[in-house]
Length: 164
Ligand code: FES
Image (cartoon, protein in one colour):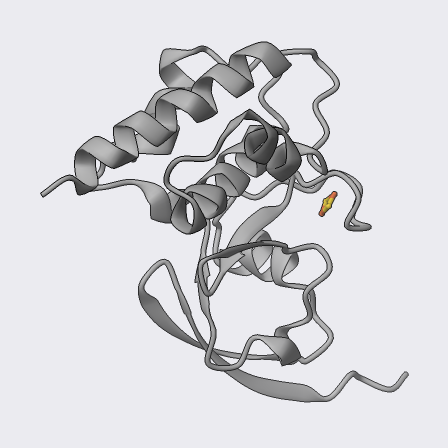
């Protein structure tokens, strides 16, 4: 059986440089979960449809189940684990905890990472912008109201932490 050719990918994950020797078509989600034990990103659909696997690539939300390593050379990846600050939850994580915005919690990685991405681009998103940002992330439990409240709270907390 032919083996897929190995590919050298150098990238930064949560601020730490990594050099990975894996086939270039290996999807980022498998590397994070299986090789690096970063289990914040979840495997949901594996097809780019649910958002459970969301990470940030160069600060923007991206679906790790669909991104091959070959596209990540020189890029900066942030996972849920990378949002903590000095070992404590970051502002977005804190807001989701405060509002108890999880039932089963499986979607929460994606909801938090999309919120982080949104707030990096727009510090004062209106209701439409928030709903638009979250529209592609599926939650089957029904904590949508709490999730929306958490995003609004996250915007406040982030503004506080970045205020001069
Ligand atoms: Fe990646 Fe569903 S697991 S979008």
